[in-house]
Image 1 (cartoon, one colour):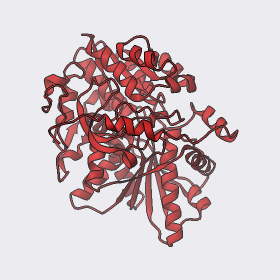
Image 2: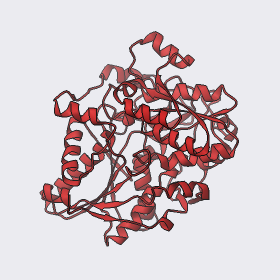
Image 3: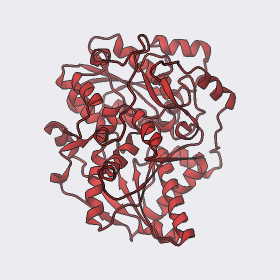
Length: 455
């Protein structure tokens, strides 16, 4: 741990713009489709859910979008975040690889999520919105949005996936400390929730179900808008402050990554790190390998179909083309609750279709083993979600060792695990099992994918 090297930027180096990779892609994203008309949606279709400023960012093709000063002011309370050289881990692995990690756990919520939560709260407040509704899996997003809403004076309702609501009471307490109301999903508060409970009274919930509940509340309330913590373009856009800072820090280190690694559930922290680097590559810069790591129990990139699907279980959202396991698929309960989503961000899915990224999946016990190894070498306990990135980076470093090649690896340590210690307790006690999904349930979910003429 004493060998760890930290690269720090000054406050005036907090990025002034968000980077939009859509400006540099060789092919545009497939359009978002209205499920009723079968035609591409327009801004008016999204207006019940989002303020116009965010809708504009969702469809923008501008390479750079200015970050408002009030957002940068809040960013500066924890940004820029540090970049570490993991010499301790390198020594343990006995690898010729150089390993770096961008550490987003220093934010008030303990993860990368405030990068978009602050922006979304600001734009909603600026448009006169009084209240937001949202979903959360492990609670990282709910905690971040609760923090942001407290700062800008917005009320917040959070629908937290039931299995995480039960497993992670301290995340729930954190949201309530910031003033949010937290409800276990599926709930009796919405038609979507009641329908799920009528069929599955003991449902562990899923992000797809929680999204349905949060969207339903926003769509039916004039004073309420919806906020999403991942998947959509504007969310991934806001996270690019991570990669932009990392590029400056890698220059400080006199190095440049050959391999980028990030965990993926919806795609936000992954995109935040890799998109600025990929953009530089697309504009003629250095070539890099990019590895997305997902849970084997919810493998949308490695097992899902690339097709149009709903983003939620109750089919209240527009249709987007993404890698999906089917909107009705409910993943088995595992501790990386932030990665239990049936689909992948359309942008991340598009990057994979363009062969700009590759994907791997791992079971949770091997990810926790990697997280423990990392914690003992580097002194930071990763969140269960981040353990997937740690595992991916370790495997890449060991591959370098086997090949006798010194590569530079950079991964995003997207959050700490201080509110997830029960999961570590279960791991050490041998109670943490690798979860498998039912192939029949996956097949059924995929068989119900909507038919879209635009395909």
